[in-house]
Image (cartoon, rainbow, N blue to C red; front, side):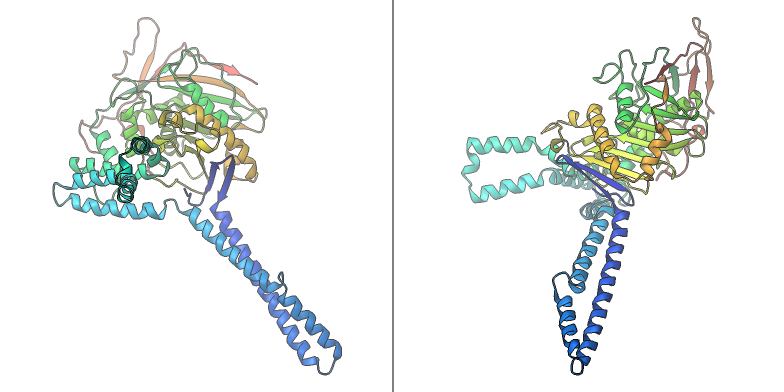
Length: 542
């Protein structure tokens, strides 16, 4: 795992390792300067020894000085020996910086070339998809097959014993977890996406196959309208104080059918929290839950159709809904905002940050258990990404390396080595409750960062130095046809959000997407927001 120009935090074996590649480069430069200084000191000692040797014949004391100078140069901790040791340390530090600075490992970079080469084969005949699928299987279980072949060659009869068969079955059952933990799952996903894309015309040898195929499928799904239904009885939620509390806010935003959701919370609910600080300033936190429906075009917008759109970099209903909810909440253009989400919610948070450049002052984006998306947060926003090494959802983008940047803190936690389940299932590895605990570990490690670190500054900008007074508002996102603007029971006003004609069914999205172009509601069809006079909110102070 590496992060280009940012910080990486590895939580492994009961301790954390916080690395800043840029700081390592600076340290290596300082060590090289120290080596040069020691070399200069040794050169001066040599010159003094030469002069003492020239005077030794005439001045008896010069002989003693020569012996002292020679001893000083040859001792274990003399300038020459220290210069060599410091030089070696500078080289190792520089190499370590280069290793952490790589966003993708050299092995994955080679593999991307292999996938591209196989893509050329796809265009030459009908055997491309078969070849790509076979390569995916080989990557997933190739080591297991090779191990079996070695054992069969060494002891052909022992492999047939009941004990050996039982061991083989155990190792076969552990393959999914192993291919996720060691990064092979992302490579397998690239090959499978390339195989599927080649059969649908959505694959090119020099394009990201996962992103390309996701955009292709999302582009043929029917467009959906979105509306916001204010919740009249939102729960009383305290103001967050750190990363743990931010992720916990997302956990409590899930519906009441989940272990962490607040009672009565509907599906696809967003939490918008206004934080009023003692100095009179105001900031905001927006929490977005993850996937809660398996379909592609159903009535619940937090579904796999939204996942495909986010991963493919095409407009999605949840980004549209969050932007609308932020507008309805009355967030000021200069009031600091933190966007936080788990799973799909993290992808939405990143997408919203990119979509609202110039509209809202997004200071912080926190994602937990989320794949990367093409959208990029604005330069002024700090980013914290939390990933569990055993979480299969985090590699659904087909990437092994972490997205970096000068304002990024990328956290990878090994659950088995840090108090989590010894052999976590995919559900346990992805659970939001586990990411709340990971957030607590990050809060403990943030003390190692300097006070002016961009991540610490962003947390302070939004959360304040002391706990603020929190006003919690929630809205439920619904999709489908626009509601009747005149309801018989409760008067409502339905108004379109800068409507534009929806894209025709089956239309292809532009490719590649332009992540640096801010999203506009006018480019994504028609969005509806329902404003109800019965809206209420709750205020929490602690």
